[in-house]
Image (cartoon, rainbow, N blue to C red; front, side, top):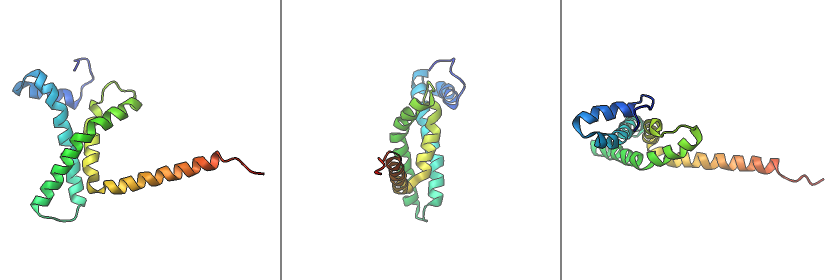
Length: 134
């Protein structure tokens, strides 16, 4: 990480973790801590929407959301970074992890919505490009 990058939460975390760990280790840990924090906040929102359950069920839900965010946040951030024109993905990590955690168990509903959106777009495209048969 270069020092001429604009200030961000990642740089603050690297500086804080640099006092505990080596600077190289802090630079590796900071993005993951930021993703975990974003996912934890999002999972709290997702947990609030969820039907009441015991502590074990809530813990397993939060654990699932944290793991899901750790797996999918970086690929989504790298993909979206190509379209934003930014030279770093770091500013996308927390919002994407928060979104993953907040959606929670509603991912199948999001998939159905996206398929419906794609279907409507394809039908609209087909109507625009249809050959008129006069």
